[in-house]
Length: 276
Image 1 (cartoon, helix red, strand yellow):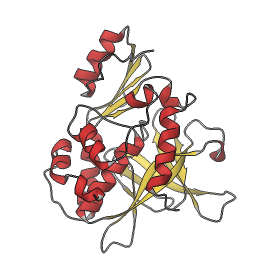
Image 2 (cartoon, helix red, strand yellow; image 1 turned 135 degrees about the vertical axis):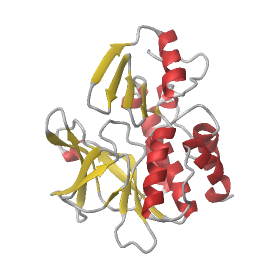
Image 3 (tube, rainbow, N blue to C red; image 1 turned 90 degrees about the vertical axis):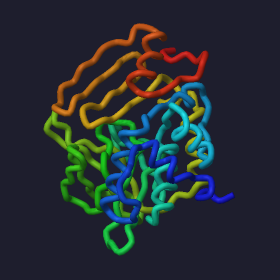
């Protein structure tokens, strides 16, 4: 059975609350992208149990669309790619190095999935990504154009080229940090296509390796027009649209499970330990 047969566009758009046009144009691309980010939370509960989540379309539909669950980058961006392809966009899956907090661009492996999206009749491709679990993530796709600042749903991003040893141009997505007044690199990528088998291997590594950051402690985020909410370990951080930041410690498992249900829209599997 093909991926598109297993994917249900109506159910997906209902899950993210998209009621706009179903056309392969820039407005639909941006609208669906933003609705996805606000409609489906980011979470690593499978990896926290040292299990690599399935990237099969039917399993993604069951977990992210039909259940009160979310997922991490491979799940989110695979699901979005299925939706965009069904709508008529051409999608290339890219593998990126997360450089946020890294010493150098080359110091981390390619473990993040991003998407290059081509719109029919538009010569300018777009970088799309609904699976980067950080406050510097894209909210809307941005044109693949170096040195230009984009304001995507209120956040500020730009793409730059940086020198490296390879034959392909190296792109870096940067986000503007109001707190420091500077641009911070989020991840680096080339335009080399990566295929489903590549991400099956990467997903297994990130979901099961005891040294993976996603197998160490809980990492859950949700995004709305009003706030970005992050539970990382026992620390809950709320960043409001005006830049106000509030933090508090989550005292126990009962409170952690309540937060997942009421604030993130996630029903955690019974019996699993959330705070470690």
